[in-house]
Length: 539
Image (tube, rainbow, N blue to C red; front, side):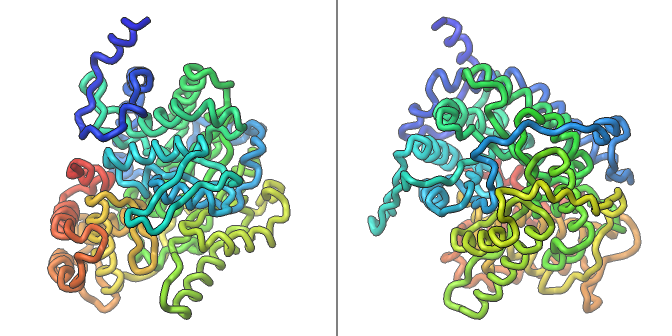
């Protein structure tokens, strides 16, 4: 037995920095478990990623996404997902955020129904961040997590009476973990995040009837969901958990996935609790999918809200689909955060949050997301008023009739100079913070993470590369051509706009961020994800 373990670990390398105490997480047994996950599922992970590239090539050539003909019988069939566990029946307010100890404590103490501990869009995947997050969650599950502010001014302690349910979001299939090599290959970031968390915490959570529970990001199709099903079943068998104990909620945050929601639910029907409207990544995916379609260019980000027809159709179809199958339909994130020092502006921001949550509750969603503890009472008050029971699955939304053309129809709007310059600023400031190790950053009183930054980055690329498709340059609302001279001037002007940049998150990395955005925007092809080239620059 010992010899088998030794042979398993021969081909594992940890080329990253060695952090104090990492052996407590990366034990020989845990590493052997990760090795087995990689060897069992890496070939299919790569096959799924290749299929994504092939799908995008067809879209670039003019094909449009649509509902699958080969799964019509499944969509028409009469079936439901497995019953929901008690802990996931009422999810009216979920808080999301990174996995540092302070955030974990504040989120679990917040009074939210659930906390999505996010290893993906709001966590920069430095080796230190990942291991610190895994350690914090392990202590949280054990009930022993505390944290002292570096200046000693405050001691944060986990409330033992907290009823907030922990849900973990690993990275998507497309991301690697460069600090763990198996047989000379990088381990998938998704398998590292979920596998290591499950190895250390699954049995303890199962004993408490708390899962473990996960959010699965960036899926595009039923085959990717089926891969997750096999991974989760493998983990359950290896860790001695009952089949189906590990429950998941899938984020519908890619355009291809909206056409396969029934199929995704069916692939995970023994363990899926619901689908979520990952609105910001969904807008990014729309931009990426149609990056070479001049007739589907979107206006600036601030004009692309959930009341736009294509986004309204997406959210209402998700509600209808989930409730037909006995699953929760979760709403998405309003990006606003409280504004300190300006009561009028703050009330306006909170009013926008309130209106967004009221839209979701009235539409039939079973819960929603917030990014800041101060927004929990607002969201809860709205859902308490509109949803007296634990959920709204009885709201079947049979009135919703959505076809392919509605889901892909672009919205009208403009590109203003302010909107263009704001995309440049947000991308640079977010990139700088990310390169400095921060995954979510408040900018102009909006909580920016990888998803929102991707919208700005993809829009800049698409707006500037449209002449390649003929038809001349796009124009700002004042008639100014949207060309590279406009972009280059915006980049050159940015450092002077950020006069106090050393006070900003990642201020020392601003020049590097400018150079990276310049490179990505001038490139002949849109990079699949901002974080892929940025990841290689992380120490």
